[in-house]
Amino acid sequence: MDFDLLYAIQSMRNPFLDSIMVFVTNITGSYGQLWLFIGICLCIFKKTRKCGITITCSYLDMLIIGPLILKDLIARPRPCHIDQSIDLLVDRPSSYSCPSTHSGWAFSAATSVTFYFRKFTFIFFFYYHFYSLFI
Image (cartoon, rainbow, N blue to C red; front, top):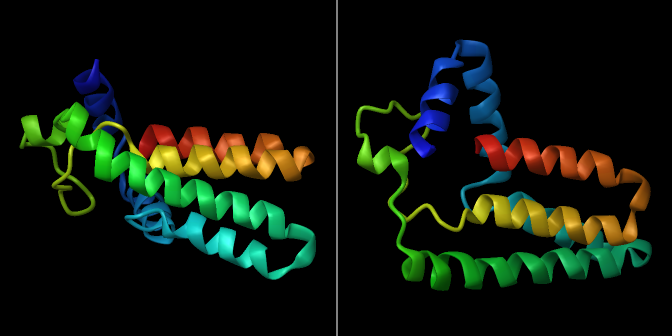
């Protein structure tokens, strides 16, 4: 299944979509810095401080639990490590693939925000699903 999805994504590649994916990857950061930045920015204002603290704490939790604990316990190789012929738009990651810390950060941030900004729930979870499928 991993390879079916990987090959399907590879078949959709074109210069326009490639540039979008690289842009999204760059603004989010390899360590999910976007979520940390959003959390810190929300901490500045009294009205959004609780949400900012929640996002920042969930980011730090995922930073510890994901790459530092679970990745080495699960030790699942990335499909691009098994099939070296896959041409990536970014540098080939050296870590294991599971759990996806990018998805973890996006999901935890989206969940945190929905507790404080319910009317934007759809937007955050739409972005999370897009992000977790393709990044």
